Amino acid sequence: MATEVSYNGDGNDKTFDITFPFLRDSHVKASVGGVTQNVTTDYSISGTVVTFVTAPPSGTANVKLYRDTPITAAEHDYSAGASIKADALNENQKQLLYAIEEAKLVTVTSGGITTGAKNDVT
Image (cartoon, rainbow, N blue to C red; front, side, top):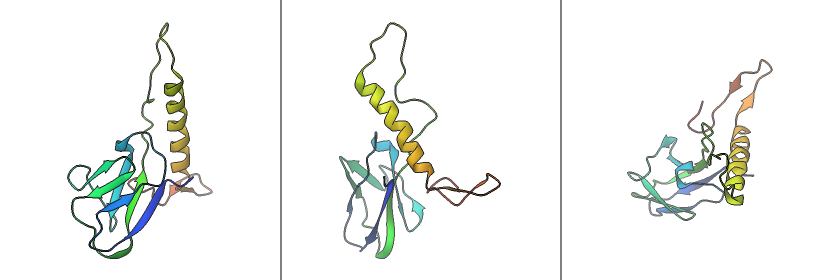
């Protein structure tokens, strides 16, 4: 499953489609010309569309939208005696699945050291 998509900026278009699944808007990141953009300051997300405040300049594949799913905590916690909802279970499963898909973007050397970059993570 794709976890990122690149577009050619043209200096006019401000909107770009998010073509990969994600759980929260905060999991979608954007970069222009290799520079990470700030949500609210540089772009906003509505549904599956990213809208930049200023149209990205012309360039080949210079606009990148990517998913960066946090895995420091589960999306949902469960408590003894509380109801467990299917949606919460599914979102926790998707959180792990998405993180695994994103990890495939990083390669591993024979020594076990990761090399390359996964967007913001090097």
